[in-house]
Length: 464
Image 1 (cartoon, rainbow, N blue to C red):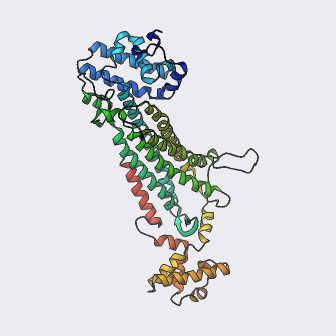
Image 2 (image 1 turned 90 degrees about the horizontal axis):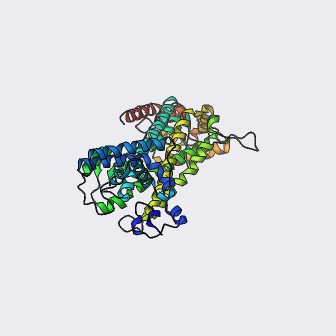
Image 3 (image 1 turned 45 degrees about the horizontal axis):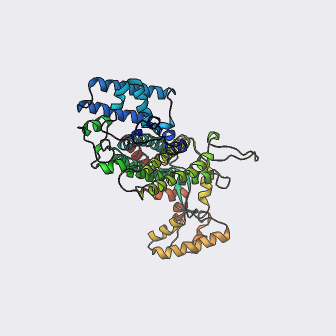
């Protein structure tokens, strides 16, 4: 059977075409065609370098660049015919280029391989994705800062073990998520540095005999560094794994945030209200208003965790250099990036619309003896050892449970039965405002510190 019927990029060695099922099974074009813009960007830079290195003439370079530009326009207009028999995005574009400009199109692949080509494309694509994700993190953080500033004085119960612990500012609570997102931003910025290293020029695995000038393509494509080893250049997927690790941490944070929003919108908590546009109803229970956006984000975290595990498993048994296994890197990476970006976008849209139920939060903070630690601290300032104070307050709480009274609701005589060191100044520390305002240090929940943290947060975002 004629070799002309096989894939034109490598058919010379084969005497029969690939089985139709195998062609579909091994093809990646259905998912890697989303790399078209970055593939064309890399090819234009490669052609420019080949001309400067004396491998292509100026006319050949110009024909290639003009052809690639027109192909990109075809793709974006939905007029490009993607062919499974051409396997991937690279060969589809190269074949179309040859159709358009003739034999000159076949010269584009001089001095490179699909191995270093795809490694370059993925890095270019992921670099752009990270930039888009960083922008969404910043937008979400801006929403958190605005809410924290507006609600610095709103008091809610802080929890440990999901039990009432101490009163905190609602703004302070929101700023905890700001801190987590700041770390996510830092990790992705750092990850981007290792993404932004150029493998192009590694060719198949050993480099090329052509007089390429990798510094030129590096500069044209905006890479920060050139990969120093051709074997590593074509086979490394650390950058994708690292991104999925950073994305997993970010999704874990969003999942925890989601869990709180789900709890807070329940009838049992009733701390906040989400606008209808971020919720759905029930097909059978007309009273239901379900927080579907946070629930779905909470669920989608598993997709990103799975991408990380999948990529680690994909790479763990591979010898150097490139192996076909690496075709399986794209779908989990694409999905992880899409999921994180969309989840951040949903939260960035939703967070500014959250409305706290101020009185409900305040009433909840009054229950559960949330100022018990403040009473213990008060007694310490009277000169008693903290452990003794802890025991005294424990007895007072037991009395409160039996009598149905919070500490602030007890009379001075009731409190003094536990310690004669308690005087009428104790009520200043047993109020919710007194408790919150007393924690007036960097990182504390006092409203003044919340506003100071908001100012620092705004300065951080302005400096990005």
